[in-house]
Image (cartoon, rainbow, N blue to C red):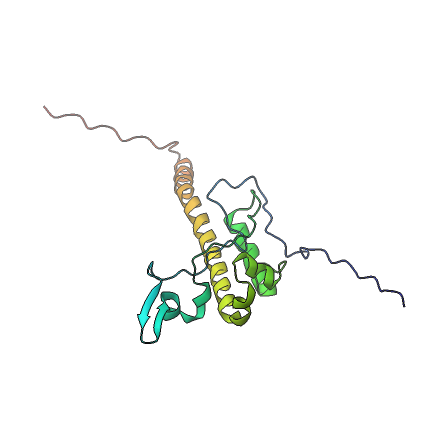
Length: 184
């Protein structure tokens, strides 16, 4: 019996790939792509707390949903292109979440888990904890990208606005205040 030929699937799936920048190279702080978030961290440098049933980690004691993954580790996903700004990356993330329920539909759950170190038997037996931790790392990454963009542009928006207002009012460039004359 002849074997059936399988149809090749293109990856990334069209329309779901990494964000694409429209302008020149982004000059601000690094933009984080999917798989580059930071897992929820432990609540203290003291990793174990004595309890009636022995020693329990801070993460387990205060946030049992993240226990095996409350490491504060950063994901190892690839960086976005040099021309992708924080707003473009965040827009792509929101579109993918709305359409596919994940920030990176071009990766499997195992691949995403691997970037955050959520692999092996621990991940298998703690699937909810692993997915909660990764989801929070991705949300934190998106929030961080938005803050990066706002901080970067906030320093430029005010001077641009003032220059535009001065031109509109016919004053030209702003002048330095005149020094007061001394009284003798």
